[in-house]
Length: 248
Image (cartoon, rainbow, N blue to C red; front, side):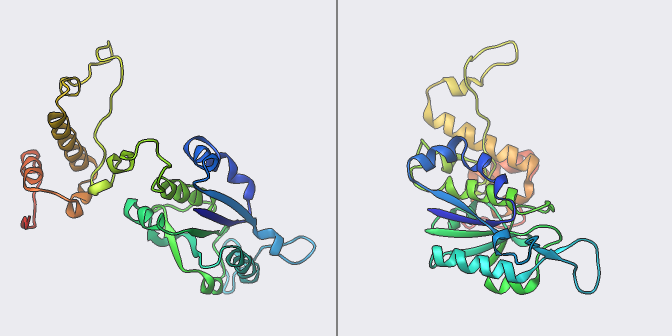
């Protein structure tokens, strides 16, 4: 899988994208990324990328022409690639959408800056993506978050083939607690069930813990989670009210 990130600040990308799991994935040839410096498409002695917005208002706006030229260059390098603009008003990035994007062979990510970009530049964009209900100073950090979340679903990137299936938001639930050695310590003991060797009991415990944590921290996720009758009964014991009928 290949990414081209169109940005005014390419120097902000290497550290998060070349470290840890992403760095290892690149060494294996499972994905690669490159930055396309938007300033190289800005005319004039000072290569100015922004200008004052028509109608007044605070801040500056990225000009459409450099963005359109940069995206045309990126599309020529990655024919058929989907172009996504990182924006607070875009589709919310979640695990399901990340998995969907991982099926693409190539992606072009546009990072705007300042107060956004000239709306006319969006004619060359296939969609907009938001990493949450926050406003960042630019799209670079959001692009790194998107790449990290998507690459995890590329086959071979995670050492354990089931790791992505067990993480938070898979199946609509938050992840269960994890423990490692020592089993007993002054700061607490590992739950006995995890030391039992009973895989069925461990799976049941983990499922209930995921349900409990989701109910306590993100109850909104339960409305669209994949729940079976046992899950619903357990949640009702915690005080959850299920407004929908169980059709399973």
